[in-house]
Length: 220
Length: 372
Image 1 (cartoon, each protein chain N blue to C red):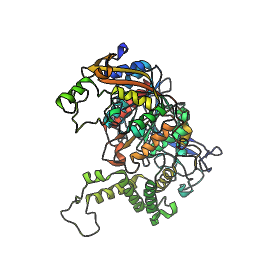
Image 2: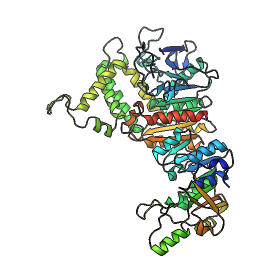
Image 3: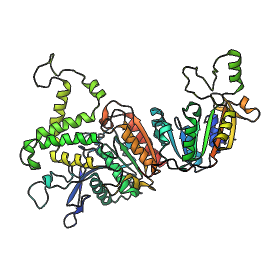
């Protein structure tokens, strides 16, 4: 699945990287220090832009020669022309988004395809944690307590598939993964994925593209 | 590198300005650092801010040099953020200034006194056109990068819309794509302060006492806009100047008063009052948002291939971050490759002139990224 040179990337990013066509135009939301963008730029000659809220991380990206906008992703995605990107990547962020449906709609406007990854809240350990201990789950993928977690959305692989069907997205590719070793290593789960996967990764396309939602397109 | 000059546009080949008037001959003072490479593709043009000059850096490695430090000494030099071992750096004094290039204090060849208010109203676009003439004269077809802060950042943007094919990349810092009402207001107070000085004499003061008081007050106002609430609180607070108690008169009780008076009187020694009037007006006229009053705007950038890095400072209240973000939005809409970063700093608008590793790293990394 993952190509041999991307072992330095987080495991879910290795999968995502393997899905990207060479030479594509990419937007990476919440790009951190730009590991995925830098890898794709070097290995697949992509034209990439990242969006990162954290000033220090955004500066680190620019300092390594990447194109990155420091700011809030909900604001920063608004001004791009329709279908400007071949892929828009939202990795491990969907569970932290206040209005996920609206965000994904915006993303599918500016990108032909959207890649989304998120922690699978129906993993059997999480279910057992809640069932046996009666407490909000806490593990390697979800290391937070209920009071300090940035994760405000509880999503499972099944939930996302239903969401995609309801909102007219077609799922072009999907991978259920189980990762360990600080998420550096992992494996793709094929059987009972909703129970066994720690992460879900989906490549979606809007089935019928809506007309442009940027009414003020002409006004700079 | 000593100051060089280039003169063009002698009559009858005067340069036609944006407002239709003709001006010539025009002299542009400039400095270069580093070497132009064989491929002629390593030139970085640095545009100075409103009261700056061509002296961007001095060669401090040269022990015999008596040159003063340049205004961007920490950024420009061998091994620095803008590495003169790698790049050929040009910095020229803007048209309308008083630091070697033609401006209102220059004397036209056929006259025996300076232009004064007979100098035509020049725009940021005219300043950039003059730089373009210099670049052509130096035989350079393409600029690897155009970099500048404040009014220098406006020139950077103007370069991108006027000569998009010549600009490989652009770094506008602490700037805006159009002057806000607040920025125009401060400039107008500065201008009124000069024009209210009886010594100004409608701009005709050369050879006598100039409007020194008015110019000093104009600088005091300007200087406040370059600082920030936080910076002034940290630097001065309510500390008294050389005294234990309030004097109960109008002397300079507070350190901040004394500091501004000092900045004002220092400025009078190096800057021309008419030049301030002209350059502030040029920046007030600056507006690249649409083509209402100008031929070119950022809307015309569609299809251009320049790469942008926009930098703003969190405490800049002259050109706040929201204006940098508007610029980023405008560039995104035309599909430009744009990076943006706000630097957290409490020193206000002038922060880009203060040594900061974060700024150095951003510029160095951006320039390196172009070569990858």
